[in-house]
Image (cartoon, rainbow, N blue to C red; front, side):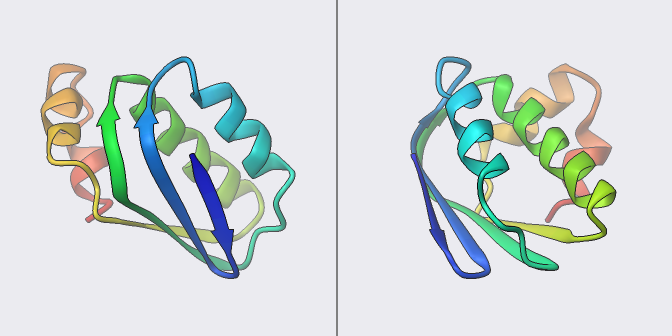
Length: 94
């Protein structure tokens, strides 16, 4: 689901609505570096809740004066973002 490795967090498996609360809970317990990479390369499936997760992480980073860089975002994330009219926000993550 999520592994923490210093300044890089590695997401894996399905990132869906059922798993988001657990992921957020694990992240809230984690000490955040000023710059953290969040790698999606091992994610196998996403749904629209993945957008919510990304936006929540961005809000938290801003609040804590830190920065998240998203790496290897799933290709279908752009399609979901376009569907919800937030493609500009997602395209700025690349």
